[in-house]
Image (cartoon, rainbow, N blue to C red; front, side):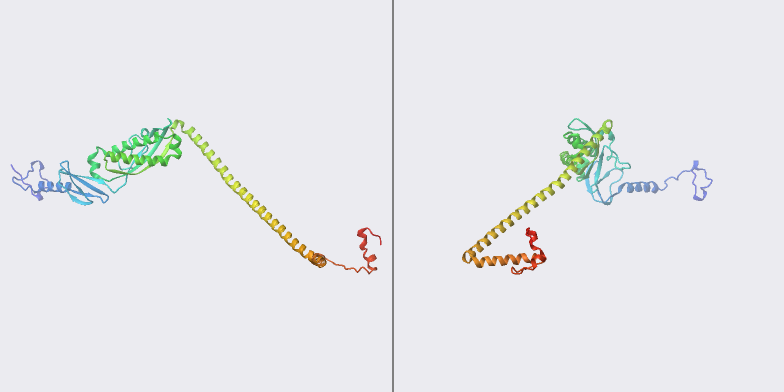
Length: 330
């Protein structure tokens, strides 16, 4: 028996006996099929990415950012590749909340343990920043390109650190390590055709192993204190020595100037004496009187009081007692 339930009869109806009428409409399954197809065929490519479309697994085309439509039900597969975004991978540590599963290491402690060139151990943490420049090579040339990049980066860093002493790795050689590691990682990624460009290699924390970390810190502190004392000594040296050199040069220049002055004065006196001598030879009496007058002219202004006594005056001598200084009794 066939039962047809109308909408007004839904309440209280026996659903166990409900059946669709024979030859009823097929629009509902068709509508669901079309909706699922449209939903699986529409996709959006972000502005910093491109989409590589594959049809039955074969490369079809590369799609620019925007809203696009592809064949549904897995016929076309669109893989989003961020080509304008800078990606990074962390080695030896993990940033909390990272969304990229290939960014963080699976075993940070094991990955950071390295041996330096002088057979010392060090814990090295670093970051590799890169961009996908060739999506086709990134997808199809290398299997698991992110894992391959991690392995290549770790291999290069172990090689670079192994060529240097532990002091160079921890203190003065960080910049050289970053530059050399960047060049070797880029060469290796080009050789393997991974389709990526290495932008930067940045060293983070570099520490000795935990059992010897306290002793290493004491040695490092002693070396820093040594460098501090050396710098202070050089500062004092650079402060005192140039000052002494300047004073020495100043005194030498002053002595040379005084020497030149005395020579010029002596030569001037000689020239003046010779000139006076020539005049004295010509007129001795006149020259003698002129010299006498010039001498008095230069001496008398310096006297505070002047007393001129005539030889014929006798009464002034007992009053002034001028001859007492010579031991002459009045």
